[in-house]
Image (cartoon, rainbow, N blue to C red; front, side, top):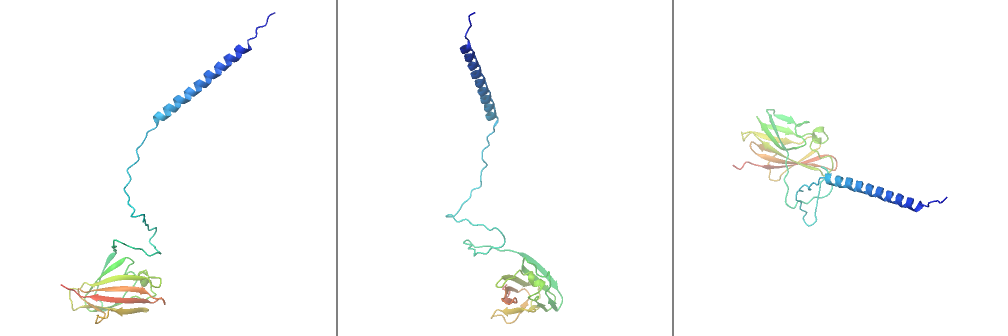
Length: 203
């Protein structure tokens, strides 16, 4: 009996089948990849605000507390709140809540000559001035809102307050429609120095 040797044909057939299978897989992957790419939507980048850094100098303030000297080359503007008070008492001592942490302008209308004594340096009312450390400074403008110019508002020092006045100021009285600037400075011994500067109505 004559035997037919067909191993070579068999291997050729198997090789062709594998090549066709691989080509099909590659084609399917390429088709899927094309479809994926076709489904991708391209978005343009949003327009960003223009920024400008002057010669590489860029600053930031991370919190309300700043421990380095700051330079304001174009000036600065500060603000705060106005506190309005009226009284007909002849004497009054400042207490908690009379001057708040953000008060910069105190509008006082007195119905008669009144002496207002500052809060003590170690009181809770002084804590509202937010000057806990030696050298801390706070400014406050006091306006005598009474329309009777002869009616006076006189300042007096509370316990632990070192009250100073401008050399040109005759007394510590603020006449009606006049204004005074009070500068509170915490001293090294925890007392408070209070400097008073006064101006008179000009029109």
